[in-house]
Length: 231
Image (cartoon, rainbow, N blue to C red):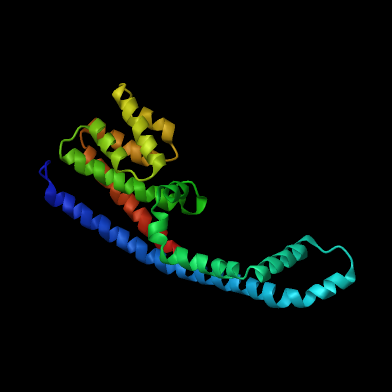
């Protein structure tokens, strides 16, 4: 509103909401199968520990010889679950609870930091964050907001501690006269060459808004493709 581009900001917000809804919908579908497999596997282990192992326990004792380590682990698990059956309920309920409350759980800073480090989801998480940052840079540049101020706003909007620290360091380096490309060298894993390179090209050519918009479109496409492949 203060920058005079409220219509563009709302359009971008609608696009991001649509992207987030699409991602959540596809992730829900992708998580149903592995969650079901995990629950079935846990139930099978519990049945084995409660019903099968106790029947073989007298036989193992009569043999009087050392048992393999996996067998001893299963015997110990059977004894613990037989003595404390409420643990079995907790083990079964845990994955169900995580699946139902995944949005509240996985949006916490701890999990967001973990996602940008885990090989299986790192690409998706980083692409998602970079698309949002690039879109913000494009909008803020169109509103004639200075780039150092933009970096400070990116830091304030970051929910991921790793990115918050990265933008804070970049802001300090820019304040000391360092270029954006040089400031990015400390955060190669979080700020990709494509992201920084296009911002730099836009800075040199006076087209930061367009360059950042291109980066945002590219990473939004990456996110859609990655989520599609997960299904």
